[in-house]
Amino acid sequence: MTEINRRDFIRFATVAGASLGFPQLALAANPKVVVVGGGVGGCTAAKYLRKLHPQTDVTLIETKKVYQSCFMSNEVLSGDRTLDSITFDYEGLKRHGVKVVIDRVDAIEPDKKQVVTQGGETFAYDACIVSPGVDFKWDAIEGYDEKVAEVVPHAWFAGPQTTTLRNQILAMPEGGKVIIVAPPNPYKCPPGPYERAAQIAMYCKHHKPKAKILILDPKDKFSKQGLFTQGWSKLYGFGTENSMIEWVGAAGGGTVEELDPSTMTLQAEIEEFQGDVINIIPPQKAGKVAFASDLADGDWCPVNKLTFESSKHKDVYVLGDASSAAKMPKSAYAANSQAKVAAAAIVSRFNGIEPPDPTFVNTCYSILGEEHGISVAAVYTLDKSSNTILPVKGAGGLSPMNASDQQRKREVSYAHSWFANLIDDMMM
Amino acid sequence: MMKKKMPYLLLGLAVLFPATAAAAPTGQALAFTCAGCHGTDGSSVGPSSPSIAGMDPEVFIDAMQGYKFDERNSTIMNRIAKGYNDEQIKSMAWFFAKQTLRLKPQKHDAALAKLGTKLHDEYCEKCHEDGGKPGDAGTLAGQWMPYLHYTMEDFVDGRRDYPRKMKRKVDAAIEAEGDRAIPALIHYYGSQH
Image 1 (cartoon, rainbow over the protein chains, first blue to last red):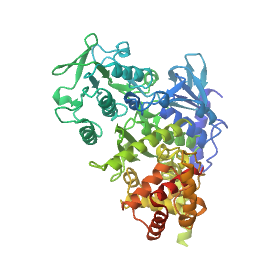
Image 2: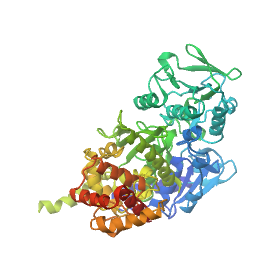
Image 3: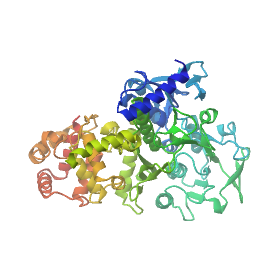
Image 4: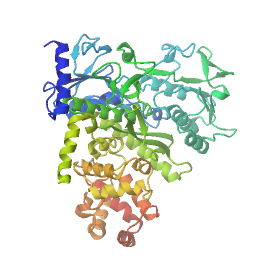
């Protein structure tokens, strides 16, 4: 059977199976799934595919030998945790029977249903999951590029960049100034830049009490704004003369146009700002492999949200930050939730039955001080007619404003649980 | 007669229109969304969000309904529980009831735990049978200690409906051992795995 004929046969078998009630009539005994990208989406999908359908042959391809989580990486900047504590190997996934290949994939080949790595290996697939996360739009801020980022870090991927930023904050003079350049929407981890400001302030409060942290923002509002503002006020004097944290939004001229790394000066829309440490989080789009594989439309990858199958190529599924999954945010928990929906949909396809109705959750914590945590949560369902993931009305939302100290403290410990369980669920 | 025929008629429709046969989210699919905080299949790896695997379905449903209608204090669960209807809560309850609880060892004070064993046997075992293993009441044995601590804080401080019988027993334990009583019980439960 040629590849095309075989595929047509499968398509026919799937349809026939669904309508004649022969759920087991489908693919070969051991369908092959190739997962490109070993982040939250890719790992969770690989683990749950094996869990839901153990005969699936799952290969996960990732460029790095270890996974370093962006969630909880701001806590490395304050010294609250080490980079080691957010670094994990892929041994756990192997214990679930996932084949882990450390190699680079430039592009997948949807027409040939195969993935060829830079190392020269070819992997044929029945279903391919692409979960590459985000990439930066390097041309958005003049004077800022990948090379300059070695000294003016983005620290938006955890790893050496996190260490660079941490060391720069440690080396900064007393009374120094840290500038965080926040990105425009949409980007991964919407509350991240604001938690970062709080985490840097948490360190400075103890070690450099005269330091300032300035956030330059091309937006006029941001995630959990009320709660951040309240927490910053309580902990770091926000809104007073002596505030450690200052935020300049779009209306105040917060949009940054240019960086001069030699003088550590940022040209914003209205004035210039000079910093001892500058952290630029550039605007974002889907990861490179998504563009090279013709999966993107604009900056992100459109998908059928019932299954997370690409709207552009059959049998390819795009998960997590790279997918266009409105109204879910680009968060770790969202990717974890989407991955399970995709895994169930792929297994349904292998079994020749309709995919189950999806259900999603997002939960995201931010830690503003040793005993001050806040969260946002949502439960989502799919509106099939508009292919939109909608939050269930009356549910979800933010931690209450003016919550007691006890509640805020509990949210810190639940944030740590969220981190540990999310890592465990995706790759252990 | 009509009633008997209905299922066949529905089956016929399902065959004709397979798309309409797509079920609402299954208990499994709903339960999978909890794992990011409560662990894969409800066994939390800690340090504080509770394990919910192996829970009695009634206890699970009571808890979720309590959160949903703001009758039970929480940080985040009252927001999440509002996202589900009774049927969905029930199907999650049955999913978790069928899961095996996997426990991890926790750091605990052995002397306190020993005192807690004695207190548990005397004051708690009657309702929290088998050292507090999942049963007719919530999971205590091996439960994450910070969660147990928060729960007792809520009972004692009046943020959670305190069953009269339980209050009498806890008061008696405090009467006997003073402020050590509740920590001792928590360390006893935390010592089990």
